[in-house]
Image (cartoon, rainbow, N blue to C red; front, side, top):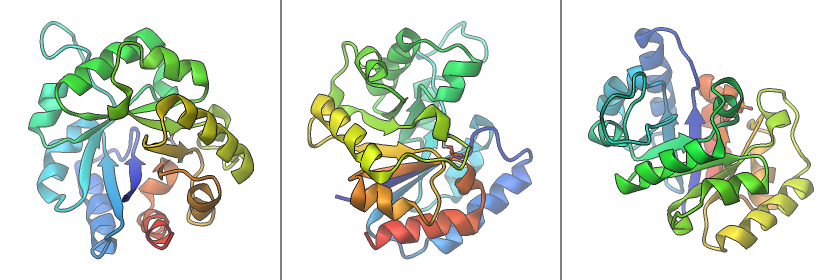
Length: 226
Ligand code: PGA
């Protein structure tokens, strides 16, 4: 099975021109990728333009509404994302839990709406209870889990590959052996192979490194050879 690498651009970059430059540099560096599915998750406002540029790279969003349409100011629905060519959606990121006070219950509603529209949800968690609550009433085979220890996000600190493997195994016990489970938190070209080979993850979610084309391309190339 192909490895999965997701680029979470978060709230970056600040102009469309820069977003196009970043995307085109990444695309240029990833022309002959075969064993890896690469998904770019830009801010909503850049989705349409990047959707037209993307070619074999996949598109994802960083969140989605729990309803298809209606009076939900500031929200973007799964149907809108699907219509723009999005295939994936990141949900329950720790920054949304922290700064937007998103609860497990709300994330669960968002996830159900995403599945209903045929988007592939990537549920970010840093503990087991977030899986159980986030997946309440959901067919778990269709959900991708991203294990992101909060203390590892954007800090340059990472768990040991052994620690990460133990957690990966715990998630597998809940999700089943066929589940796609990613690692996220300070992923870089030097540590990425360890998370794949030693910890057994099916791919990674990269934040900071995804904004630097050279770094992100190196991450994908390293995973290609795993
Ligand atoms: P980071 O972010 O790679 O900058 O640590 C990962 C994430 O928040 O998804």
